[in-house]
Each structure stands twice: as structure tokens, then as C-alpha cells.
Length: 228
Image 1 (cartoon, rainbow, N blue to C red):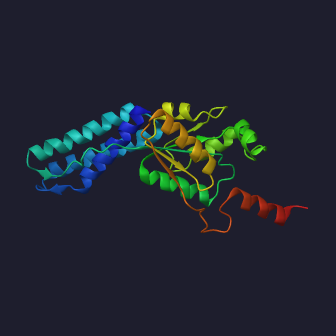
Image 2: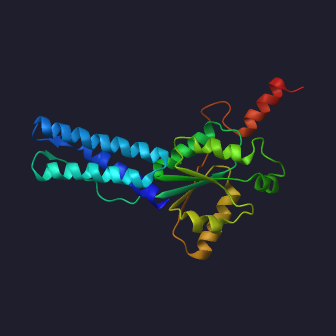
Image 3: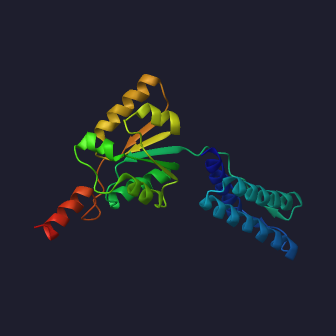
């Protein structure tokens, strides 16, 4: 996880450097070197998606080195962004039938930083809601992992253990959905007892831009339209 977060940070830094880039000498060799640095950035993005983080970090290092060399020679100018910690954001839930409300939650999480999603186990949902999810846990996990706002996703512990999750994923922020009131109380209690510095946020209202923005709404509609 550490290498993944580092590569993400380095990619963002190099992207910001290119955004501020000023070319002072438009000699063909200079332009070719700039293009090569862009290729290294593109390669780093590719290796990030493939999960080859060490290779991606090497690509970024080459790209940064090329830009730094050109700047020292007075051929270009740019600014490296101020070093800023990428915050880890943990989101947890069942994510049974994916709907716009889920996407809104994950999109909000992505604005805060690096998103790690904990998908509830079937057995956990059974204990809490006295019913099993419609979609099995491994399938729900696979779907969540494919969403662009999600950086990492894992199945939760079979027995709810908030402290274990916090210790393993070390979040800076925990973002909750509007209906996770009880879970918010549990998390705040754990964080307070352990003296942890974690920002806990909960969306204040349900996402209602579309008609079917919750799992219960979707199930109700299916029963009304197709049930007998």
C-alpha cells in the first residue's frame, strides 16, 4: 500500500509540474526531451493501473530528472508543488446493488484523498440486518474495485472490529453514508477511547437526484413492476 500511495503522489506532482511548465528555449532537442518526460509520466500511470508500483516510481524518477536537468540548463522553468500528504479516506458499507447514492459517496470520498473501501461480509450483514445481501460478498467487492473513485477495496472482518480496521488501514478520514448513524457512534467511541486523531465525516442527507438512489428503492421498484 505504501508504494501505491507514493506513486500516486509522485504522479500528481509531475502532472502539476507540467501544468506550470514554461518553455524558454524551443530548440528541437529541448522539445524532444520534454516529450520524453511526458512519456515517462504516461508509463507511470500505466504501471500504476497494472499494480507495478516500483516500476512506476522508476519511470517518474526519470521524468523528474529530465525536467530538473532542463531547468538547471535554463531551457525551461516550472514549479514543483509543495509537498502535501495524501490523506487516506476509509469508506465502509454493504454496497449490495450499486446505485447513484453509492457513487456519490465514493465521489465525495475521492475529493478528500486516497480512497480505501471496506466491503461488509455476508455474515456481517446477516448479523446486523437479519438478512443476507442479494449480491454475494466477492462479487460486491469486484464491482467496487472497478469503480474509478476507489483506489483499494477489501472485504471486512467477519466480526466487526473497528479498531482492527483503523490499525490496519490508518485512515486520516472516515467517511460515512447518511444512514450510518449507529456506526458513526461506534467509531467515535473507539477513536475517543484510543485518543486517535481521525476526522469522522458523515453525509447529512441521502442523494436524491435520481428516482432510484437507494437499494431499498430499487428492490421496491422491481417487486412492484415484476413481482407477482
